[in-house]
Image (spheres, chains in turn orange, purple):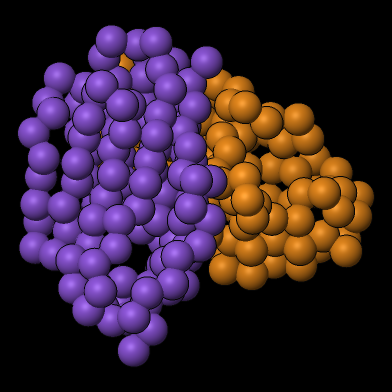
Length: 115
Length: 113
C-alpha cells in the first residue's frame, strides 16, 4: 500500500512565524501535491511538483512556497503565517509525471491553527 | 473552465437505506478522468474509483456502484444498504488536460443506526 506521511496531525503557530509542513511518500511517486481544505470549498491546490527540484503553482499559491530536494519529500512553507491560513492541509502523491491520470494518494492531513 | 458540482451538502439516512450522491462536472476536454474519494473522520482521503471519458460502463464494487452519463455530465455514486461505517465526506473530482485535479465541495453522508 502507498503510504503518504505528514509530519504533524495538529499544529498551532503564531502570526508572522515561518511554518514548515513536511510530507513523505514511500512509493517512489514522481508527482506530489499540497492542498488546503476549507468547509464549503472542497480541496484547493496550492503547489505541485512532477520531479525533484521542480514546482508548479496551483490555484492558490499566494503566501506559500514549496521545496522538493528529494523525490520522496515535499515541504510546504508558510513564509509569514497569517490567521487566514488556518486550515486543514493535505499532501498527496501519484505515479507517472505531468501527463499521468493515476489516482492521487493522500496523507492524513495537518490541521494548522494560526493564532 | 473546469468545474465539479456536488449539490448535496449533507445527506442523512438510516442504516440499510440506499443513498445516491450526485456529481455534475463541466469540461471542454475530450479526454478526462473522473474520481470519487471518501474522507472518513480520521481525515485521510481514500481513493474509490477512477473513470475515463471514453468508458461509460457502469461499475459495481460490492455495495458501491457508479453511474457515468456523458450526456448529462454526471458521475453519480450509489451506496446500497448503507452502513454506519459509510459515514464520511465524499468528494467527486475531475482531471482534464490542465494536469490538475478539480474537486467538488464534498457531500457529508451521515448514516444513523
